[in-house]
Each structure stands twice: as structure tokens, then as C-alpha cells.
Length: 490
Ligand code: C2O
Ligand code: CU
Ligand code: CU
Image (cartoon, rainbow, N blue to C red; front, top):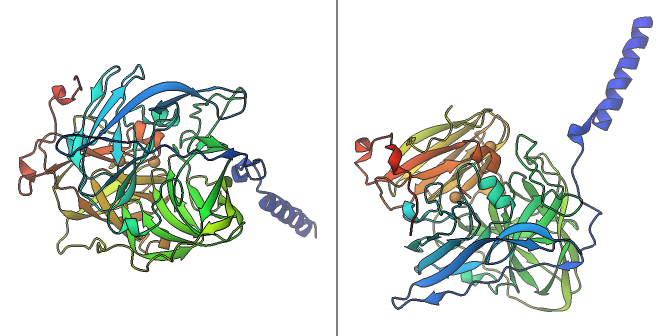
């Protein structure tokens, strides 16, 4: 009798604690109910190129410190590109020749990486192409890849988290004939959404709190650098290009009124056919293009729903969208979106294994600028298997596009079946990717692959690979002489 009694008490205690979550780890970080949606969403300006005599589109970017008014009456110290926070949107078409002057006025070294771009490794803007304070870096290449929503951000080894967190990032849109069939009127029915979580001090300064193992996890949201944003739309169909530009947090995006949307593109390009969904998960660095239908007078909130989706999703209102009382009617989007077939596994594809660890290492090694981890024939397609023995991570490959073959041995979820360059890797799980590499062989200029949780990346969760002329893989030294760390000095 006594024992039974005690067991009963124990059982009810377990039940009570179980239901209330028994501690803070289950408390969901949220801003739901806190916003007024009073500020018009900032739309980053489209940067106008100058056209060189040979037709090259030339863009000038200046990285600089500034102050930004996120909150009424408060000035926040921030960094930006051609402005005080974030950078302009660059928009070009497949086949364009582009060139840039990237001027560094930050007062310290940085880099500017073109995330998602297929280009000669020298132009990639990764950890190797440093731009010292006061200097200008001038990369150029020809846009040769399918339409996509790509982006740019610093990539200085050990400093990426800080530089991105302070505000250095922007969107880079590539158009082609397929993508132009979708809503494409920038700022009207084609809207960039750069989603970032931030921590602010009481006087409105950005807090670079790095306490969690994932890095800075904010409790406030900025979209395109706007706090408390709303957007009025005037079209019955609007395409949103959502970029997770956060340091670590993942989002599980949908609408508070339960409306569905059509997913039309992943990171690296259009899907072959649109998929109707009501959620899409974006871990840091990932993008999704969605097309949403509106009725006149509609009001809805774009929200990140808390779930088991990963990296402490939280529950966040991102943006209130209000549809005008009269809408420009657009014709329904065509069923077939992309004329580019999905990436296929070639016969005898080379398989490489990558182990992500608890210590933020890849294959038990920290990033070493002098060590080349993989030598890959340029232009080939390989299978890369990513096994996660640590907490949650994701994985991004430079100068490549991939398709997820499976996640934990099963077909990937619907929102991650298209062309990608960054993928979430579940805790204790694995993903298999079929990866198409860029076609610019090099003997010295390295590319990187890494976890896109910026603290992990900074701590060395990154490897280097070379894309070489096919057949020359075995001739490449895997240690580099010290002097090969380039400095940019023009
Ligand atoms: Cu978004 Cu290696 O970068
Ligand atoms: Cu990248
Ligand atoms: Cu990681």
C-alpha cells in the first residue's frame, strides 16, 4: 500500500513536470503578439550597373560602418554596403559579364563572397580573397548558371559571424527565360525578404552575444533590416524570395491564417514544377522562392512556426502583408517552371564522406588554410555524404549546385527537393547529395565547404577543396607553402 502510494506521487510528479516542460529548455523564444507591424518593409534598392565598352555590367560596392534607426529615437551602430545596414540588390541575367569594385571602408580586413555563384575560384570572395582596410577588390566573371536567388556576404575566416551580424549581406538575383515567366517586377510583385534574428541591448545596440553553442540567437526579427514590418501588395500573385540571413537560427515559414503557397525555387534555381505547401524550412544561408495568392483586402502574417524543424526554431512573426482593395490580376503561373532537368547521378559517381562532429570539425579536422582536403575534377558530378555526429549543423558547398538524394535514407521533404547549395543536416542523421561542380579548373585557388552556422564555420568547421583539370587530381600537392595565403593589394 505504502509503496503504491509513493509510486503514485512519483507518477503524478513526472506527469506535472513532463507537461510543463520541467525547465527552460522547452521555453519557446517568440515575438508573437509583440509587434504592431507599423513600419513599411524596406526594399533594398536595385543597384544600377554602369556598362563598360565591352558590355560588362559594372557594379560598385562599398563596405562601411554607419548607424541605423531600427527603433524610433534610437541609433544603432551597424555595418552596411552602400548604406548603413545590408546592401543593395544586384540583378543580372544568365550570360551577362559582370565586374565589381568592392571597396573596404570598415577599418579592418574583410572579404565579400558570392554565395551560390558558379565562378572561377579566384573570384569567389571566400576566406582567401581578403580585402584589407582601405583596399578595393575587383572580381569579374560571366554569369553561367540557371536563374536563382543568390546572396553576398563577408567570409573572413574567424570573423564571418561578426561581420554578417553587424549587417553585411545583400541579395543577388540571376534571371533567365524561365524565371521571367514568374512575377518579376522588383519591389512590386517580386519581393526580397532577408530574415535575421537579433539581440538588442536596452539602448538599441546590437548585442554580439555568443553564449550558445550555435552562436548568437536573437529574440527580435529584422526583415530587410526593418523591425516591426508590414508590406502592402497590389498584385493577386506575389513572389517572395526568402533568404535566411541569420547567424544560426532556422525558420519554419508559413502563414498565420493557414494559407498555402507555391514553392517555385530552392537555393540554386527553379523547381521543375511548383509544389503547393504550407511550410518551408530554411536553415542559415538557404533560400526559397514562393508565390502567394492574395484576395483584395487580405491581411496575413508571414510567420516562422515553432516545430521540431531544427536549430531552435522559436516562433516569430516575420511580416504582416496587407493586400490593397483592388489588385492587379496576374495569370496563374505555368505548371512547368524550369527547362533544366534535375541533377542526375552519373554512373560510377565518386562518393566522398564528410563527418560533422560535436567539436565543430569536418572529418575530425579543423579548417587549415594550408591544407587541401579534397581534390575534385572540375565540372564533374559526385555524391557527397554528410554524416552528423554532433548537434544540428548544415552544410554549404562553394561553386556547386546539388540535389538532396536522401535524408536519413528517406526521400527528402518536399521543400528541399530542388537545386540547392546549402542543406540542413539533422542531429545524428545524414544526407546524401548529388553535387554538380563548377567548371573552372585551378591549381592554387581553393574553394570551401562548411557548416553555415557562422560560429561553427568561424571555429573551423570548414574544409578546402580544389577543382582541377580532370585527370590531374593526383598531381596536386595537398599542403600549400605558407606564402600562398594571398593578400589583395591593388
Ligand atoms: Cu554563405 Cu561559404 O558561404
Ligand atoms: Cu557560399
Ligand atoms: Cu554547425
